[in-house]
Amino acid sequence: MKTARVLVIRFSAMGDVAMVASVLRELSAQHKQIELIMVSRPQFVAFFDGIPNLTFHPIFPDDQHKGAKGLWRLFNELKKYDIDYVADLHNNIRSRILTLFFKTAGYRLAILDKARHRKKELTRKRYKIFKPLRATVERYADVFRALGLSLKLSYQLQREERPIPDAYQNLLTSKTIKIGIAPFAQHPYKVWKPSHWNTIFKTFPTSTYTFFIFGGGKQELETATTWGEQYPHVHNTIGQLGVKGELDLISHLDLMISMDSSGMHMASLVGTRCLSIWGATHPYAGFLGYGQSTEDCIQVEHPNRPSSIYGNKSCICNGVEAIDLVTPEMVVERIQKETLPISKGISQSRGQD
Image (cartoon, rainbow, N blue to C red; front, side, top):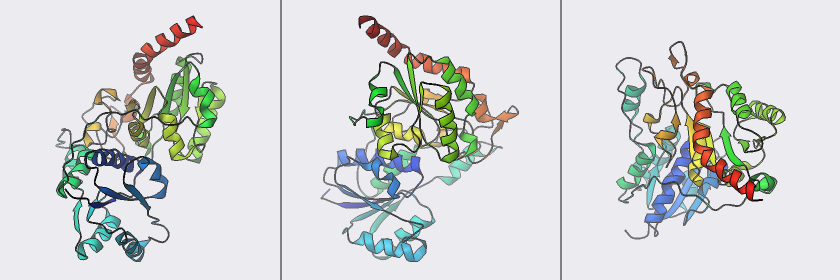
């Protein structure tokens, strides 16, 4: 295919935009002649750093791009890139209005199939069809395929060489096992009880383990700060680094532990393995982190799971919320299993000092 300029649209949410970045890296590597114009919220620009021939164009949906008039303004901004194709990877009201402008102007476009019917079949309580859906990243790739661009996803984690944030130099160069934890999520039914993390922090010794807490707002910051005060090997990063700095830090970790949330997808972007904890949602919905393994999903199967795609609905299983079926002992066991080889290496190294 000759050189083409492709407009890519995905405004939110954070994890979904991170998955788009994983797909665009593969697309750019396989089609070096393509130029990409990525339209998303400005806070997500760091996800796309390093992708060749990609220009990031921010959308400000609460300001100059608000409403139909604002989207018309955005349309006129984007036309200046001399676009050949439009890939709508969002398929919501805002993106459909924007793509309608392009369609009316004669541009070739393709739109994401969200498979809403299949998702309802997976999450309904009665007559649930419990089968894995097509991965979201494959649905993204399908949009480019519909535009005539071949694309094969490798599903391989690729470790990135990134700088160590200055404030964390000593912690990241110490002889300990470095584990990132993203314990929060937008919806409460995807959040493991904060008290469970106390068990984790108490189980793994300060001499061998260092934990970094990621993600959240003011309330989550208070929780992370309390953990840092209680446990000397637990360090808060919320509000400290920005998205780029967080990606830099995650790239130097031995392991990430996350809810079904953006922390998992950020780990994928920098090639860090992630253990993920699932409750009301399920990997079958297609949102497992790119390159992550289903074997690293910590969950308890139950006929009621999943109750929702996004974790915004309660999922009661045996009288308790589905996320609470996951016990601290289960997570402790997985951490021990995954970090035992690293801890042995650290012990040997210290013995040689």
